[in-house]
Structures are given as C-alpha cells and as structure tokens.
Length: 335
Ligand code: NAD
Image (cartoon, rainbow, N blue to C red; front, side, top):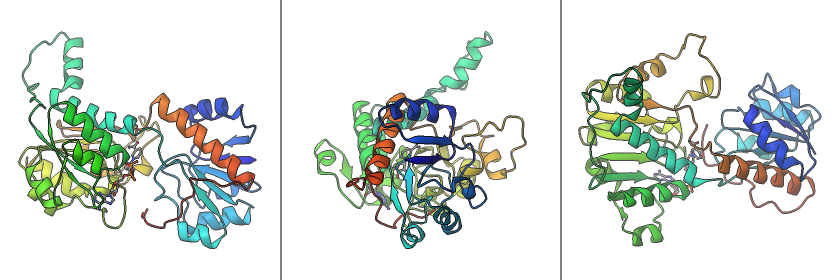
C-alpha cells in the first residue's frame, strides 16, 4: 500500500525501512507535520502514518479524505491528535500502536527522578571543569520515600514496581484498580490523599477531559512542600502557569518533564539557532530544579522496533481487509 509518513525523522526511516523489507509497502516520507496546509501532500495515498504532534483535525482529515485517504495509522499509543468523530463521519479507519514498551517510558521517569535528586547533570559539568566541590549536589535516599502514581495502566504499573524495588512506599490513584499491583503492595487512595502524602508524584494517565489540568494550582497547594513532580504522560495534564507559580514560591522542590502542553511548536525539531517564542516554556528552562526532555521517554531501540512492526502490520491488515486489533474506537481523549 502507498503510505505517506508525516513528521518523519531519520530514526523513523531507519526502523520502518528495515521492517518494511518483510512487507513491501510503498513508504513516502514527509518531514512536515500533518495539518490542513500539508494534508494535500498525501493526495493519492490510501494510508497516512502520523505521530504525536500531527494535527489530524476535521479540516485536515477532510482534505485527506478528498485525496483518497482511508486509513490513519498512528505510530504512537495516544490518539488525542486525531478528531475521531470527523474520521468516523468521513469513513476513515484509525489504528494505533497501543503498547510498544511501557519499560521505556517508566524507566525514563525514573531517570528524571534520579537526575533531579542526585544532580548528575550538574556533577558531570563540574567534573569536566575540574570542580570537585559538592555544594548544591545534596540529594536524598529514595528508600523509604512515598511515591504517588497517577494512572496505573501499562506504564504506571511498571513504574510502581520499579519504585517498590527502590524501597519506596507506593500510593496510586486510578479509577480502575489493578489487582496484581495492589497485591504487590501498592495502596490505592483518593487523589487528595495521594497529593498530600507523596514525596514524589509521577503522572501516567492519558489526556482526557477529566485529566486536562488535573495538576492545577489547587492540586499543587495540596502537595507536600518540596514535592518532586514528574510528567511523562501528556503536557496538558499539568497547568504550566500554576507549575511556575509553585516553583517560584518554593512549594515544589523538583520538576521533571518529558512533555509540555504546547510542545508541538517545539519538540522534535532543532531550534538551537532560533529564539524560543514560548515565554512559559522559556521560564521553565530557567529553574535549576527543573529538568526537561523533549518527549523522548519512548525512545529506545526496543520501542522503535515494536512501533515499526505494529504500524506496518496494521497497514497490512487494513489494506487486505483483515481484522485489525488496534483500531481506535472510543472518542475519549481530547487534543
Ligand atoms: P494505559 O491506557 O495502559 O494506562 C492509563 C491508565 O490511566 C489507565 O489505568 C486508566 O484507568 C488511567 N486513568 C484514566 N483516567 C484517569 C484519571 N482521571 N486519573 C487517574 N488515572 C486515570 O496507558 P499507558 O500505556 O500506561 O500510557 C499512559 C500515558 O503515557 C499515555 O496516555 C500517553 O499519554 C503517555 N505516553 C507517553 C510517552 C512518552 O514518550 N512520553 C510514550 C507513551 C505513552
């Protein structure tokens, strides 16, 4: 099948091309994000392949449908970037990669915690300059700390288990209780209790109307003074302005972010020669106790291989009219 692959980077080509030797699809790579301006580039392609920051809104989907596109194949788990109602009304089928490596994302959350706590990024710079002083590098033992996990699905469960391995007490909030996780020693509590009792809070829920700005000024004020907040889920789960207020007041001790609510104007691009226009993001980068990575938590070779395998298999099934287990049905999450 002819597939237009938007937001394509060198690493996408590497994994998709290698896997495609087993499939023989005609893959055409497009650097640009999908939006209503770039949608005409896919005219004549029955399938388009999208990533997290493409904009498959009603207007873009309408242009794609008029050009003959019938399948929207996401090479990611989240589908908040697609207007599912519009896709349905245009007769388009949307498929995704529901899980590729929960370990990749959970382990990155732990990397953020460890770096913020033990300040290895600052120590690395110091040692290179012959500065062996320890002032400002003081951390704390993770052992015995209370860690709150919001969202205990695939990634949250792996994260909770890792933190139990450090000797942490793990609290969880999720409308759906995981019995295996509960049996392993994790305690499910109301959100308010989790916010009040946790030394570290890590977000692993999807972006939905219920979770949009779940972490706002009210939630931050309930947290322990000095709390460490980690977000590897979706940027808009946190109200960034409230986060900055919490940091300026000193109430929040550390923040680790792999996602940001306005990241689609920034992430996955080399902007090192440009002036960042987003003042909220720019302010966040000025805090010594904030560590930001550019949506790389998923980025391991294991995850990229799974993404390529599942994406091309989804295209094969859709093209041959075979059952596809990864069709997105529910119009839950929001963009
Ligand atoms: P999942 O569907 O397995 O788990 C999500 C969990 O969140 C479920 O248990 C669900 O019940 C729970 N949940 C839903 N609404 C909630 C609420 N209001 N409060 C608390 N919990 C709630 O998903 P997953 O595979 O574990 O992924 C979690 C999220 O991680 C994804 O939605 C995505 O946004 C994000 N993600 C980020 C990256 C990255 O590279 N940074 C990569 C993959 C996924």
